[in-house]
Amino acid sequence: MDWSQAALAEAASVGLSTVRNFEAGRSVPMQNNLLAIARALEAAGVIFIKENGEGPGVRLRKTDAGEHRSPA
Image 1 (cartoon, one colour):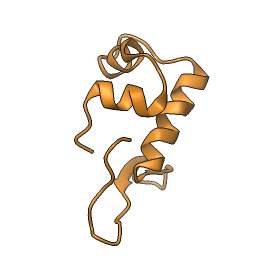
Image 2 (cartoon, rainbow, N blue to C red):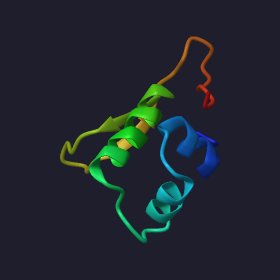
Image 3 (cartoon, one colour):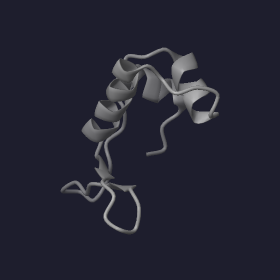
Image 4 (cartoon, one colour):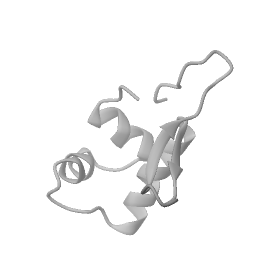
């Protein structure tokens, strides 16, 4: 996505420390913050792929221009 931690925090309306601690593996955000982060990523084109025998994963949805959206 090429987002900074600050851009993700802003897009998800969560604190920067929430994103920093989650990315560093220091903590798992509270459920409402985790859902907000997931929704922000999905709105930007991230597709979360459920377990399908190969393990869960993510991919980016293509846009008409073949590019991905930047945070608002």
